[in-house]
Length: 100
Image 1 (tube, rainbow, N blue to C red):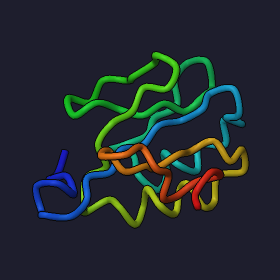
Image 2: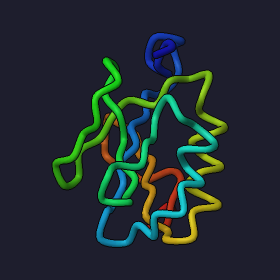
Image 3: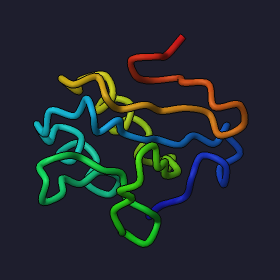
Image 4: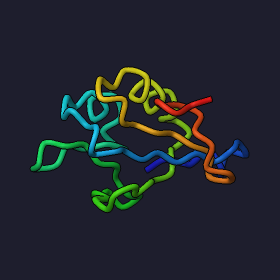
């Protein structure tokens, strides 16, 4: 995966998916396939830096800075409102259903 926001000097962000709300539409995987993937159960999961699916509830992965717009748009357009993008430092959600 590409450099994270932290490597570029910006506030590092991470993303996670609430599978209980996931509708399996796959919009996230279309926008950012390096970050999201649909599993055999039909639900979306975030991927680790080495491309593995993170299937533990609440598992988060860093948001690569070049993909920030795609990840943000995924959270915005997700029909299940299940994608959460938050700052690593204080866990405040910046994009997603709980964003301030």
